[in-house]
Length: 329
Image (cartoon, rainbow, N blue to C red):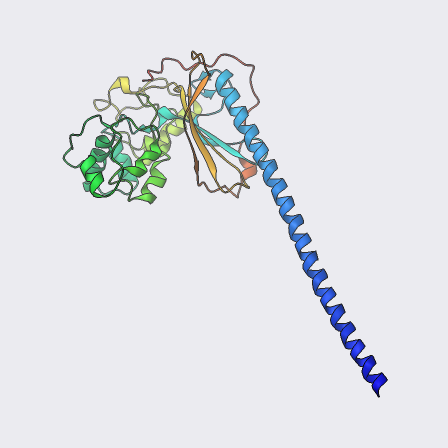
């Protein structure tokens, strides 16, 4: 009986040991499998970051060496400067937007900015106040407009005072009274505004929403303008009767891209996108361009029909970048 009891005890201990070994082996196998998966994910992310950097380097090289034409960056096929997507290296997506195709928060066009705000859902009774606070934020005095806000109003809310200078980035709108408390509005609006020190407006590169903000315009007329310019770039305001006559100063309209381009780049594996604005400075002794601002932003990667997005066209032979008569301030 004692021998049987001893053998039974040994069997139980053996089974326990085997169970512990099995659990430990499963645990370590899971850890190894997880480590391999993380290593593979890290490797893929690193590869995507390399491709991301390759696309950025490609764009910067083109910006510094490629001729700008009415059609965009380079000769046919040119890279359009109307924020349309292109596939870069790998699965990253890049968009180039002529800043003159956007509404400028440093040079507010009173006939267009209120209309754009209206498209984005801002009630008519709030639009003048928003423009007044924007103007007070950027002007060089402490005089408060009727619906504006100066240092005392910001101090009362515990906010940093206005810089009383031009905005360096459109993202500074997030600091302005009357704008900062509308994050959903700003998320949409930031696609259509710029802080570049440019005068004028280019209907050849403007998004449909901005074209619809032209006096007398609508999304339907904007679609018609986009169709016209896709067939052939506009060279004058002649095809735009009713939009500009007697309302916009003819000197406000330009039809050639500016020397200031907003670039937005995103990748499938990265949780953020980057956006930066470049101003070409071909006569500078230090660099062929200047980075006006660089920010990380949240942009949803288009998970569908990515393969249908056009790839960046092949590079054309290097020629000095040209920006025309830009009237950059």
